[in-house]
Length: 272
Ligand SMILES: [Mg+2]
Image 1 (tube, protein in one colour):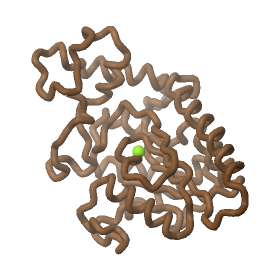
Image 2 (image 1 turned 90 degrees about the horizontal axis):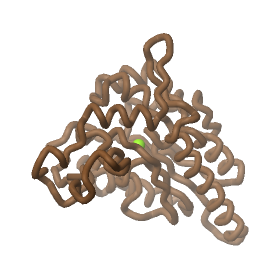
Image 3 (image 1 turned 60 degrees about the vertical axis):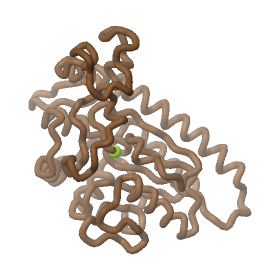
Image 4 (image 1 turned 180 degrees about the vertical axis):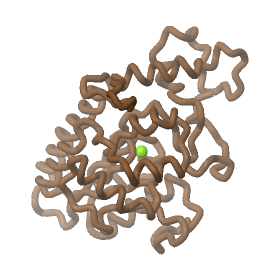
């Protein structure tokens, strides 16, 4: 029943490939709401309703996890003191420790240069306010309107990690499923959110579905894993050693071409 086990073909999914059940894993991991062993990943069809998290309860738990704060304008934001913030800061801190060790061990002799690759949504920029505003009902139109007019805040701890790595001589690449036409909005947002690194075309890869780059053998029909791993291979071919790959979806990280992967939490949606 976990969305992660879905075999639904990409063509049958909305553009973003979202699977509707928000935060199933978060509720199950939270425990107590469902009997032990009832909600198993193998049960594609729930035997009873007891195997299905209540959608309103899931939304309440997502709010609590992000430490929802409602501002005077009716907008909802994640709190820097939330358990979400603590968890992602912990991941960023661990990554810094491990990357520091990697850089020290590499020395100066290698021909390739160290690099990190980061996804954007819910890896470097936090979509909680957007998701909450649209009640987790993603659409291309709503995303375009939001990105055009609004800056997302950074994921807690990530600008500090990225700027630190860049200062240490690590090349920083952004690799997102956002579309090419969203480039300028995304660059603006990354800058405003505190990422003090290059975001030119050579460092920021967005998905160009109509005119995919020649190094992507899957062309106009790439899965997320093919698109992302193929782009990492392309980055490597430029003389880089990807010492860390960061994403909030497992599809961000699969497919190799990175020495280490860092999975950030995201109970709000699932992308195959
Ligand atoms: Mg993401």
